[in-house]
Image (cartoon, rainbow, N blue to C red; front, side, top):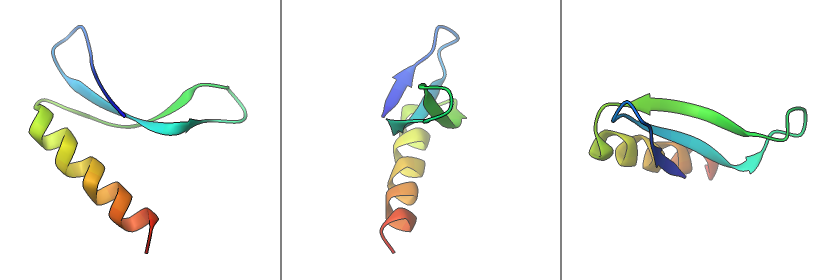
Length: 49
């Protein structure tokens, strides 16, 4: 899940919440939406190997 921050950057959050904090895990912050989408695809690829 990608969200735009107030700073104009984009952050990837995990889809499931962290059981300890009940918040979504931060999986990286990127300057461009394209960079964030590309990294999200890489995350999904390695999660399902």
